[in-house]
Length: 89
Image: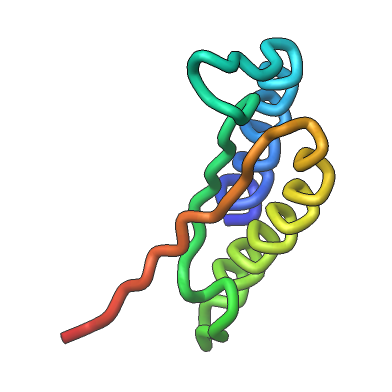
């Protein structure tokens, strides 16, 4: 779970950031050098009994993206989390 949900997104984000830095800002296209989006869920903040590994991985993604946002903002790279909310009806 950690390998896919957290480590996988970390590795992909790292490569994307390298590419965004290499390309830089292309003014005709965008004011940002790149836009980084990682996937999470409501369990990044809400505990889920019996699924601590999932909740931990999504919480890790949230904190990773908060840190990444601070690191890459000066490089004109935007970062955000697509926070999916699933409800049972």
